[in-house]
Length: 143
Figure (tube, rainbow, N blue to C red):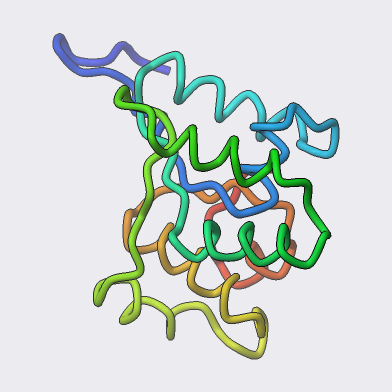
């Protein structure tokens, strides 16, 4: 790989899905080494890790149902509230909504997953996910 031009740097920004974000914040072994390395690299370079707003809603819902501990929501909210670059909320806006059809429903039937994948498409960033359907849909993924 050649040298970067003077003043340029390698951007390590990524989008992370709900499971990836929670597993990273809880230091869970379910997160792959590649995914952890990508998240660590973004942090090291001071680049954002985007979390779709639907992921925050999903975590709240899973805590309410007792499928995740309250600490999962607390850590996610704390990470999103940090003033320094790190976890950043990516809103479900018109650009993301209009990107959703690029994630075929026949391959990725779950709407929250399609929203997260569309967020990665709209930001033109890789998505950290273990969801094989999303990668089959042609989304650049890290796992």
